[in-house]
Figure 1 (cartoon, rainbow, N blue to C red):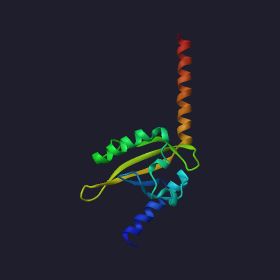
Figure 2 (cartoon, rainbow, N blue to C red):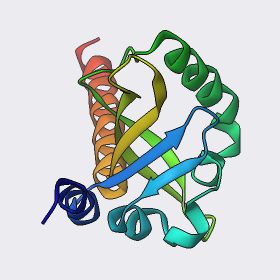
Figure 3 (spheres, rainbow, N blue to C red):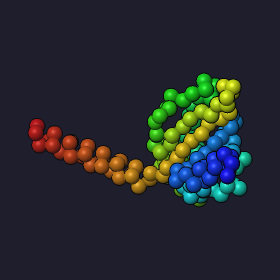
Figure 4 (tube, rainbow, N blue to C red):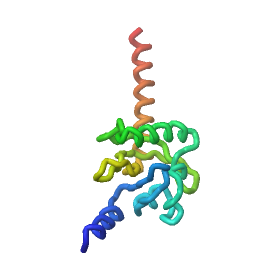
Length: 146
């Protein structure tokens, strides 16, 4: 099996979504995990804008950061995974943990961006509920101590 075929297998069988978008934010890679997480088929996603998964309220900030990272050839989030809200094909909101990298060819030319995504909706909501409960308990403890 050649290296290209092996790379395709790695992308398709990755348990996390792998999404590559070019300089204009047009999707060029969309693996099976992306289909499962976001609900858009490969045919729907390939050639579409990243806007299909970005909530409308977050698009301006997303594109500002996206364009800046591509111009600089790096992202300030290298080595980090960030939780963010996303949109599924059915219009429902989910939370995903995203890791980003800028894809650069051997000559240093920026080609686009690669994101790895993992759906974390249940964990995110549980963590938020736990934080809220802790704040409530701290407020109650503060009132009792006063």
